[in-house]
Amino acid sequence: TVRIRCEGLAGKDDGFYIRRCIEIAKKAIGCTSPNPMVGCVIVKDGTVVGEGFHPKAGQPHAEVFALRDAGDLAENATAYVSLEPCNHYGRTPPCTEALIKAKVKRVVVGMVDPNPIVASKGVDRLRESGIDVTVGVEEEMCKRLNEAYIHHMLTRNPFLTMRYSLSTNGQILNHLGEGAKESGGYYSQLVQEYDGIILSSASLNGKSYFPSSQEPQAKQPLQIILAKALNSPLQLPFLTAEAASQAIIFTEMNTVVDTDVSRQGIETVVLDKLDLSTILDYCGRRGLCSVLLDLQGSVENFEDILEDSLERGLLQKVVMEVLPFWVGSEDSSILPLKMLQKVIPLKKLRSRILKETVLVEGYF
Ligand code: AOF
Ligand code: ZN
Image (cartoon, rainbow, N blue to C red; front, side, top):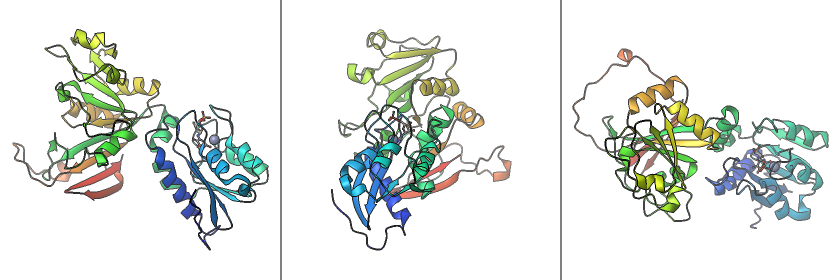
């Protein structure tokens, strides 16, 4: 452990340590679902004496690792946790008891856990035992860290993000910006944050979807393949036996599925109609907390899907990449805002400039 001395910050800058909790929680990006990402820092006399994060569901929670790291120094120390400590026996025992046993003096909590089994009971338990508890420090940042976990916990539906690329003149393109798919590029990072990614069979064209440069150990989301009624059998030659276990196909009644696909034993769901709400409902029940709808290579019926998902509130977030070029198109009309039937504003906008493209994200 690297011991960081931050004179004068202890007790005064709770935000500093909660931000540190968030930073270390992110070491487990894409690995904790259905659990949240959580970081914990133990501070004594202005010195960080222990740190930990939750690495994976089934493994100990952040507090347990941080307390182990701090050892006896946890006594009379302040524990910072980005999420309320749990007070229940799940796959692991309650963190509240571990904190009480370690005799910490104060606990600073980033946000209350929306899990109904916890929901402030962890905070109550700590206070009952005489520990001084502060709740809601850098709350917005903590919520953003676990936006998918929170949404899934409250609705049982996966958190749905739509991603696409735009030309400077507003055309949706089947194209990603330079470096986006490289390891460390925004796209390969984004993909890893999601439990599932929706692709259309047409966009696949028999090609593997994932970039070959992606590190083999990197987590890959479940590939959710939407195969609309096809004239020729659906063929997915790139789906090796290993990849097939990480794929699920949604088809319509009259879709012909290639025997190779059926032989590989890919989970196949036949619906009357490829309807996003049914698909998401299935994914939620199957334990996916987050799904990325990627318009790269155009999902069939995307206009319908979009309309549908907005109307029913299925879409939570948009990530768009604006590419630095103008493309020729037939429809180049400029519409006055008041002529549009629906204008749905995006909230909490954020943007970044990456190489030659601009990345914009926002929430519905
Ligand atoms: C914490 N610290 O690091 C995490 C928490 O099955 P379990 O035992 O892993 O419990 C999972 C639940 O615990 C999860 O749904 C969420 O409410 C909470 N996660 N709590 O105190 C942590 N990961
Ligand atoms: Zn816990």
